[in-house]
Length: 405
Ligand code: FAD
Image (cartoon, rainbow, N blue to C red; front, side):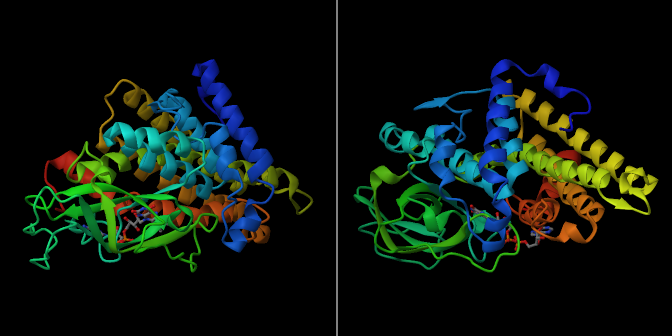
């Protein structure tokens, strides 16, 4: 397995154990039929509780059943899951970083006790509703709104406060979210909406059980990327939620953005796993496949491709390890994560394409992993902040001038 600069030597026992557990899990339970799931457009849902049993959901959180493992251990876990498939890592990212993290960081004691153990064990599935049909890269323009149950609508502008009294006993949610990983199989959705009962209508997080009246979660079926992952919409039509379903500890865009920083951290690691898996498949194939009387690995053109892939993967690994060190000591900033997510996903997208080339015609099938990883990377390049948006984040960091609002 590619580890050119011997990063493994610096891992402690727990980190090795977590990496090996995830690697064995992927070899035994994922690799044999992930190609079939990708073709069929299904997620292996039987693995959801198994992943919980193995502690794959947010093990870097503390308490409520989470063991608080190191950020490197968490990163290695994401790397091994994505070496299996981006759909698998997406499952763990959403459940852990986008659902358990906000409940842990901003939830009430009752919310933590109700949800964290069962989400951690994979007994319940969560999803994260931020993106809307008309608002993707700019989620702060969201239209989904929460009003006090007793409120009368006074304006069509979601930022405009209503005349509702603060002592209503709950909220009514209206709006629609789209491109939501796992919404069709979720038990609970973290829905971000503008609270029109408060001044300036801040964004708040609401825990919405998906069996509430007025919630619909249609599946999106036309995907050509991230096929082994379930994606859907969340329709909210006069959905009533009690006051105790609001995440009390956060208000404003900091809520969803802080969750995205956690998930993007995992993606920066995960993408390296996908690229490494594509590389290993290509390296083996180049040694086995004979043309012109010998293995294609003896041609300088193929060696050039393998040498470049190994170098790019190694550089991305180094960035991921450094990010872990910064996160561990509390120095990681969202801009650091932007650089790592942007670079490592682009790297994985480019290198899985080169791996596909090395496999010739066989490379376009689901019998081998590179084309599947390549197709998946189109999603990973786009979700959790597109490549362009992370470029703008870095541009602002480097110049002090924002090129977007
Ligand atoms: P747009 O924002 O419309 O962007 C279109 C293009 O314009 C992009 O290339 C973008 O980079 C570019 N662009 C936009 N603004 C600028 C600018 N200022 N300057 C330069 N270029 C710009 N969302 C969730 O909330 N929860 C989920 O679980 C989730 N899962 C997803 C799963 C899948 C399979 C996919 C595909 C998406 C998922 N998303 C999820 C949504 C994802 O985060 C959005 O697709 C992403 O934020 C981009 O939004 P958009 O698709 O509306 O594209």
